[in-house]
Structures are given as structure tokens and as C-alpha cells.
Image (tube, rainbow, N blue to C red):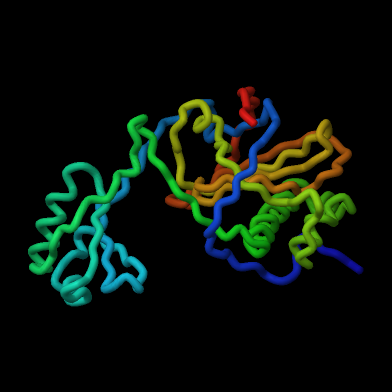
Length: 266
């Protein structure tokens, strides 16, 4: 059978992630990646605009609107008895509550949601994902295609990569697993500063002969971080490559490789 490096079988669709499954690394030293030429870059915090959630009854999904969209047309969609929720920063609620009353005179306040920010200043997040085989194959395919671009077709046609190739094409997952989820940042700037500096896509690949593996790190919109084991019995030379995809400018930039040593809790 003739195999092509970009022939990964049937197409896979991005599935909605509903149950979050977390895996912990036991490696004390891991290669990190720098966005730009320096280790620490400029941090550009992002703010979430004030929003109003609305639904007609408890059986309906929440629909979210920006403040500018809370108008007469909005009010016509939600009759008396509808439920509303306001999300925003301090100072937004009173203003938006008045706006709601102006377009929905029957609006009545029934309570206040518990803020997600704890006493320590940290914001709690609840990830709910359905980390099923379709999603894992989709992520593995991205990593495999990136490896093919970095190392070439001859490399990805090596028999050591049959495991991940069969998983992508035929849904046969190796016993060691392929895709793992973890909270650790990929970029060195984010690890050192503790702040998120980009909303872009990040992907890296590294061949580690001392560990006999080739693995990729992948994060779409720099949200969940995935580690994809492309090869678990690698015997070759070391190499590494990484790229950042800016979703605002559509520019692609190569990442600088660096080594960050940190304690890891198990």
C-alpha cells in the first residue's frame, strides 16, 4: 500500500468539548517557547465586554447580547416572565440594569450571582468538555500535518509513526495514548509572568531521543493546552520547531526555543 504524508483518511470535525480531563506531567525540566525575540514580551490584557444573557424559560438556552444590542428589538423577543443575567465589571451592573428596565419595564431583580473571583484574587473557571475520539483524532491530525511540514514526508512515513497514523485514519488508538490535556503554558513568557499574552494559535514539535519520543504541544486560541505523542519509540536526532498564528493579523511567526526548569507537583 502506498501512503502519502498528507493522506490521513476521512476528515474530522471539531466537536464541542464538554468534560475536562486533566493529566499531570512528571518531567521537572521541559522546553518552553518564546513569542518574539525576547523571553518576556509586552503583556496586553484583554477585557470582556459587558453582556446580558436572556432566555424565555428554563428550558431554553441562554443567548448573550452586547450592551448596544439591548434595545426595543431585544425586548420584543423576551416577554414578561423571561430571565436575564448581567455579566460585567464593577460599575457596569447598575447602568445595564437601568437600560434593561427602560426597554423591559416588567424587569425585576431577584438576586446577585456569586462572583467567580475568590479572596485570593484568582478567577475560577469550570471547563466542561467531551474529550472523545473525534476531538483527539482532530488534534492528532493537526500535530501530524505540522510534523510533516517540519520534517518532511520521508520522516512521517517511518514505521514508528504507524500508531498515530492508524489512530487518525482508522480510529485505532495506541495503548500509550496520543492526546493529553494539561494546564501548563506553552510560552515561556506566560510561564514566567503568569499572564496570558496572546489569543493566537500555538503549535510546537520536539523530538527527544533521550526519552524516545516525538511530541507536539498545541493550543487553539491559547486556551486549553494539549500534548500529542506523535511517536513513543523514537530513535533519531533531536530537533524542535514552533509557530504562533496571530488570529487578528493572520501573521505566522516562528517561536524561539528556550529551556525553563521548574518544580513540578505530582
